[in-house]
Amino acid sequence: MSLESAVGARLIGTCLVAEKTLSLEFELADMSYRFEAGQAASLSFVDPPLSGDSRTLSFSSAPAELPRVTFATRLASGSPFKESLSRARLNDRFEISSPFGEFLLPKGEEESLPLVLLAGGIGITPFRSMIRQIRQSGQKRCHLTLLTLNRTQEETPFYEECRLWKEEGVLSWVPVETRGPAASGRSRESLVTSALEGIFKETGDGARLYLAGPPAMVDGLARILETAFRFPQERLTMDLFFGYPST
Image (cartoon, rainbow, N blue to C red; front, side):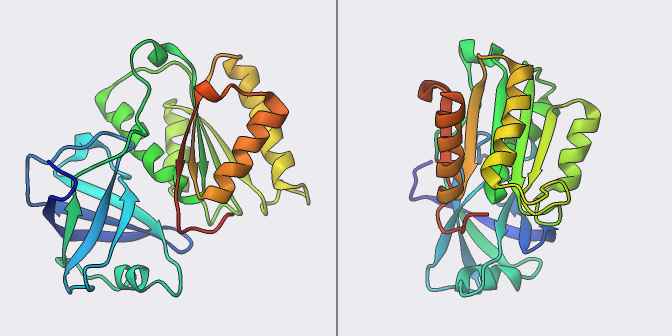
């Protein structure tokens, strides 16, 4: 399937998964459509049309859930596309491009390394795809940890699902809330550094890190990894979500 090709999709469900964060579920017309956990696609309206406007969004569902797929996005005022998404109705028709991106789960020898997923805000979407795929396929990964960074619990996408994963033993979950009760006026850098210190005590020095979120947030987390931990770049993979403000 080429990048230019697209498949038809019917909207079958929407829900808020955090404050101003909308999840949309689609049923694909093409049963042969395939993607890998962590990839993205371009979503565009067919009915009603939006002058060919489209947005790139990471899949938040697992490949095992095909032919149904989900995406999640922060709703931003001033964005005609986002505003149209918020008003979308069941059975509205969309098109979804072929999947793209190399933000994929480690393979080969790296599968045995502890894996730490750092999700800044809406950056949790590709990680949700990965974790759901791991959970549904029955895969076993060595010491999987998820850190979510948001202002509050209410702004944390898929909060209850993260809590369930932790309860089930699928992963270790470390929620960091910069304006939550535990923040006590501390800076984001201080909160994240403390959380990472605890994570690295558990994983040791050989962890593999994935980092996703708005560019400013990703850059800030990468600086913490470099300055506070001297984390090696060759074991860090990043996915930048352009068009979103930092948390």
